[in-house]
Every structure is written in C-alpha cells, then in structure tokens.
Image (cartoon, rainbow, N blue to C red; front, side, top):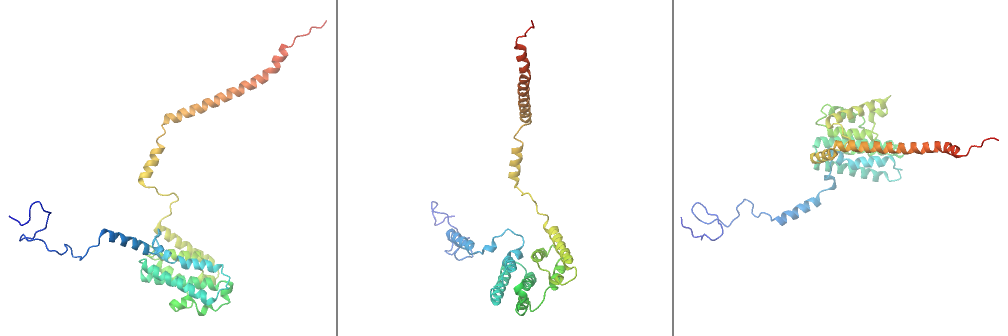
Length: 286
C-alpha cells in the first residue's frame, strides 16, 4: 500500500488506518524523567538517608535502640551533677527517637511498644540504682510513667519475655533486645528476691540458648566466596610432592655434611696430642 512517507525517512508508527501516530507520549506517564534527572534523584536519595539505615545487623530493634543503650551505659558513671529534669528530657528524647527509627525500619507497632516498655524499665532502674538517683525524685518523673502510665515494670518485663519466648522465631528481635538489657544490668523483680541473681542468670541463659537456636552459632572463621576458596585450594596444590621430597633430602644432606665436619674437627683435636708426642725424638739412657 502506498504511503505518504518516503522509504528513506525515519521509521514512524502508523495506526491501522495508515495514519501517523499522535503527538502525545507512548506511555501513560506524561513526562518520563531523563537519565540525568534519575541520576540526580538517586544521589539526593542516598544523601538524604539517615546513617542508621546503613547497617549489616539482622535486628532493626537493636539498631534503633543503640542510642538508648548507650545512654544507659553512661548513666552508670554519671556523677549526678546534671539537673534531673535535663537528664529526664534527654532520655525521653532518646526513647522517642528509638520509636521513630524502629517504625521507619519496618518493625511492627506492637513490637515497638513492647521494646519501648522494656527500655523505659531499663532506664528507670539504671537511674534509681545509682547513688544520686536513689536520693532523687525520679519516681515522680519516671519514663515508664511518662510513656506507659505505670510505675514499676520489673515484673511485667519478665512476663513479656516469657510470653515472647514461646515463639522465638517470630520474636527473636525482641529476645535479643531483652538479652542486651539483662546484660546491661537490668534485674527487675529479681533484685529484691532471695537468690534472685541465680534465677536471673537462668533467664538470661535461656534467652541466649533460644537466640542461638534461631540465629545459629557464629562462625569464628570468615566465610570466603567460592572463587576465593577455589583460588586458595589451587595455591595449596601448586607445590608438587617431588619438590617436598627433594627439599627433605637436601635438608638431610646438609645435616649429614654438618655432622661430618664437626666429627672431623673433633677427631683432629683428639689426635693432635698423639701426633706431637710421636714426633718428639726418643732419648736413650746412657
């Protein structure tokens, strides 16, 4: 069929009636971005990401709670000279940041609330067990009362961990966070119980065993890629067996030559007095 377009022109799209294509875009998007625009957007997105987004850990709860845990460690050595309200505001801000980061990291809201309860209990106990915190009015401004409207979480925390331990595969992130809190010194109800430290150590050991069953034992040796493992095996097989035999024979010959030289030297030293006595003239008596 004849067409108004010549054969030497650029390729054009025609509809069923032989008419030219419309001037609009071929896709549903009004103005697809150019490559340069995409590159700029990718660079901007990488710069806009928070530093906490770049992590190799498997537990987003621990990543989000890292600032809170660091604050707890610093509380142990705090002298208490800082204003109590300032300390409370700083710790409250850290808990709020944890909640925001955890939700942004994709953690379920129920787990975030449970983790916040555990962290608030950890912070409150860390404060009141210090010398300056025991004499303060922290109980009137505790984080647990501020975020959860409760005054003491020393028993509920372990009830929560016991309930979460029934499904360790689903709740391994919370179990790891709870294990870290116990490792940082949280005692809860066991602090006032008889032989409470033994029970607390049993709980902590049980958490560790469940976490290891889910995560697996960490390997001490680094896992090499397949290519590097093959290259290392090739390097080991480069030395032929005959070279090892030749090297061993050379070492034996060197040792034998050394022994012969030492033996010859000792033999010469031993024979030297005899040779001197034999060379002296024998005097005959008159």
